Length: 179
Image: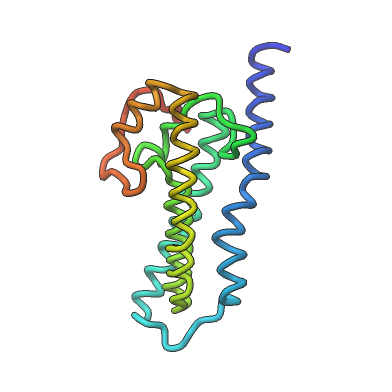
């Protein structure tokens, strides 16, 4: 098979793996909140219409960031976010220029947005409780794995891009793949 044929095949496999692995965030940000609330609006919604509008913005932004970040893994990284099908290249483009964990941040934003939209405080608790194992996974598994896999490239990235709170301006190292 030619090099370009291998690259196309790798991209297809990465896209399939990404689609399969997308079940996890869909469960965390969709199914679990639905199971807790049945997406019923509590009346009156604390904060009223402004809170609900903020919730819609957070849900929409969260979904957009999650989707574009998954695509970035396939296109730039030639892999998936799943540990069983990791990327071949460190993903530093797109939302990863602002924050090292945009998918996790976007999941928390989406769950929080549902809490605002529905007036369901239990979803704020869900976002907070979910953050604990996610943070542990990032600190004790993902980051050491990235450091072993990508070495100095990851160290430079980690030194310039925060883990949870996004930068105001994108980090530019010159190696990000444009979409």
